[in-house]
Length: 95
Image (cartoon, rainbow, N blue to C red; front, side, top):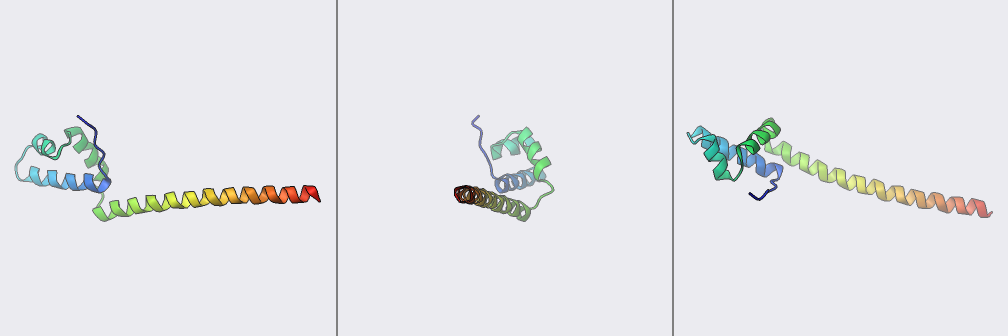
């Protein structure tokens, strides 16, 4: 079976759908198969996402994106600082 990557929100939504099917009397294995995931994936996701709500998952994703942008900004600024330090070093050694 081909591995498919689900976003946190998609995984959470699939868990809700599977739980609805289970509560209506469908067996876990059948509900998972209909959703296109394995039983072990269901249990892993349950352990990972059960305590979260969709808003928290969305906020977490947004914070990760913001963190990545901030890391890039820090890297850019660090490069500029090194360039300026080298420039100042060259000026002071030449005078």
